[in-house]
Amino acid sequence: MPLKWGRDLPVSDKLQDCYYQLQEILGQGTEPYKSVVLVERYRKYWKPNNVRVILLAESHVFTTEGDRSIPLPNIANLPEYPTEYAKFVYCLAYGEKNLTGNRKHPTGDGTPQFWKIFISCNNRIKDKYDFNPILSSTRYEQRLKNKIDLLLSLKQKGIWLVDSSIVALYNNGKKPPHKKMLSVIRKSWECYTADVIRHAKPEHIICIGKGVASILEGDLRKIVGNRYTVIPQPNAHLSSEEHMANFQRYGEICCG
Image (tube, rainbow, N blue to C red):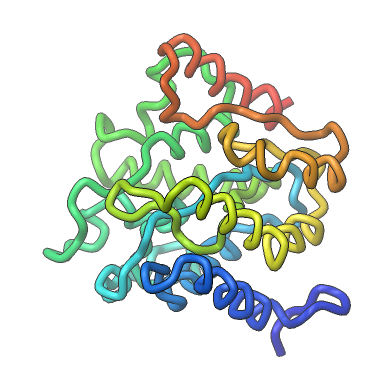
């Protein structure tokens, strides 16, 4: 039987119901529902037993049916880990072509900036070299081990990534028109994401991006009061010093 949140619909039904409402907004360009389900499987895999800090982002990247057909091998020490590729940072194959070894693996995939956020939440970052363990400067085998160890550590420490939109808003580097994107985030929040966060009962929420904060700030206050922080997206047009200060802010909150 699916897990339930109080008097609400079963989780699987809530996700599907929300998807159909978002499909009415986005139309034919909506990400396939099976991709949304896969991303949610990855997200739940890394959910801590006790959530302390939620990293609230905008959305994952559009994952096609062809993307999902790329298989992942079974990964040691990760029982029941999903074995389909998704363009989502919680999928270890996203940005790691060596893991799939598949000629259909998308080129130039991955979001190293979010791995920098993850490592900043797990360690006190002092300089740019502290990011090396999860970047291409480290050989693949060691880098993959480092990423797995990092995700396991974040899970143990109660740090969890949640997207405000259950469907992808990024497709080939493009996003929907601003007004439509706002509608998607608001609708997704109302019919699914808000309940996920309330159920998790976080001590603190870090809102990644001022755009998400501008839409949901009032709702975040209702859940955690003033226990939330807004940090610009890691791809924002800021100086290297400002980005470093932002990464260090993650450490202050999550490691404090």
